[in-house]
Structure formats: C-alpha cells, structure tokens
Length: 187
Image (tube, rainbow, N blue to C red; front, side, top):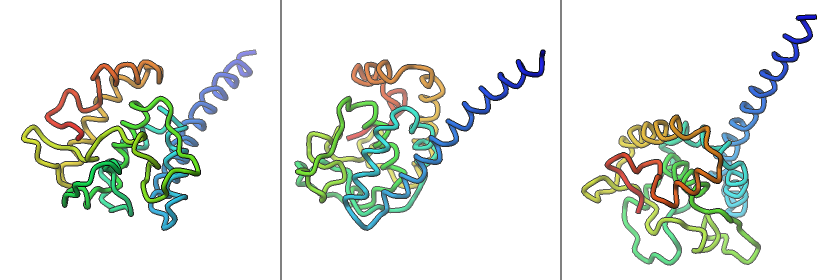
C-alpha cells in the first residue's frame, strides 16, 4: 500500500519540477527570440514573456548578466534624448526591465496598430522614461555592475517568490520594487 502513496507523492513532485523546468526553458527560448532580426518576432517574445508572469522571473533574473546587445532601445518612444548608455543596453538589462514590466503593468499588450519600431509597441507600455539603471549619483550603470543588479533581484525574489502576482504588483505600485533596497534605480 505504501508504494502507490510514495509514487503519487513522487509523481506530484516530479510534475511540479517538470512544470518549473518547462517554464524556465520557455523563458530562455523567448529571451533568445529577443535577438531575432524581425521586430514583430521580438515583440511576440515580449508578449509571451509577459504572459508567463511570475513564472518567467527566475530565468529573467538568471539572464541579467547577459552582455549581448539587442537591436532595440528600452527608452520610451516619447523620449527624444538619446544617450550613449541607452545605446549599450544589454539583453541582461532587458531581462531586468521585463521583470519590472511584469510587475508594473497589469494590462500589457501589443496590437497590430502599434509600431514595430519599438520593442514594447507604444509609449503607454513603457514603465520607465530612459530605460536605464542608475546608481546613487545618477550615473548609468556599466556592464560589469549587472552582477550587483542580479544579486539585488535575487535577494528580492527570495523574499517575495511566494507572493501572488497580484500582491507583487500591489507592492511594486507602492514602491516596493526589486531595486528599492539598493543604491540603484530605474530611470
């Protein structure tokens, strides 16, 4: 009699691990799709990552140190000022931004009327004006600082991973963001 019970528990635990692995694998594939040459495919990847919600967050955190430079900027289309740091946004920084997007935007979508020129479609979808992280002196971070950023996101996630997406979004809107307890902030 104990074997079936053990098997049921093992099967449930295994299913949970498979589900987690599938989510991480899917997120990883979508992160790679962000480098596609076709703007529409990049936008599709963003929409799918957003749809994964908090299930995408662990893999996005793992990718924060990714140095590759994508074919898009994270600044809002309304921002006409272009800085050198915006030109060097990495896929790692994009991953951190996607975490913020999941937390800070309850109704994200890109429709056919939105411009393919901008990764998030239209200016209403952007949650930060410049799309950069700055330190306490308002200096844009450099690539080597992304490990510190990743550590801050990991710390935040270990403290909040059991929260519902609704609570995570509520906390985010109240200023309890992944970088709130650090010297860094988004602009």
